[in-house]
Image (tube, rainbow, N blue to C red; front, side):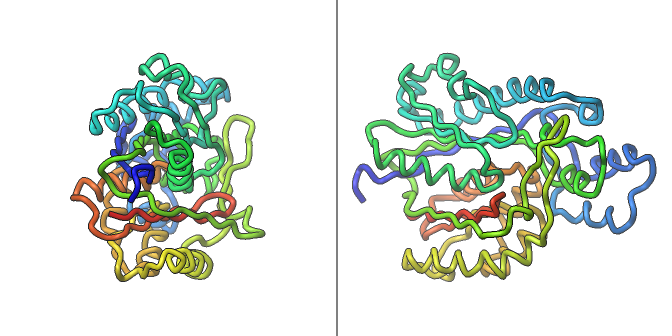
Length: 343
């Protein structure tokens, strides 16, 4: 392994201050609807595999009238706080100063700013004035894996300084809850807020070996957002767990074959969980119970792009990886993102 091969040096994570249990969410939904939820809907929302989550604002905020400007203000404040906390943790764990970073890759689909958030954090956190900022927008849940691959490619091209990847989502402020239709209730039951920072460079840590993505034609209706009057409207039209085995599995098999790998010879994967049924489908395909993926989903919900990095952080906290480790995520497009880390 040459000195210019990208390695994952450290990870840092952060969540916002407001914790909420799934039982509280079901109660809030019933209050908002003005009556008890239908039994089938209560079962669906209660079987997400989530016990608790963290959100940027108190629960009552989400049912008050909101504007795009108001959402942007919340995003600016909450995102800056999480960016700083996760990044500081990653830098501290590696013993690296902010001024040592050459480029910042920033992944976020639930909010946007001009100038970008990393540009605004340069002076505040002590990054060098010539630090290059690379914002990535629109990848949704697949953004964590795709962003890690982009950061690895940027380091290969310019290995003089470490690269910082920050994946940050404020899903809770993205959706408009005025309608309270079925898709809106699913969004309320699944999505959460969080931030993960990854430091990529030369040194100890697993090698970022290979990354790939695959977009299936005629699948725009599977997952995504449409722009509403005061927020995003969730697009969620197809059965993603079924799609995992019918479409994603052969693509992932081909990706692993190109790396000369078999699923049976790999460590526990780090998967973006999506929801409980998606994890079950991935577990069936991968032949692994995905214990750490399930644990992160239970404790944090679906944070979109940073969730897979939370899973990876938890896996690495248990000890250095001794076998190749697969990363997977599915997102709007409809896109499948895959990566392999090696010892």
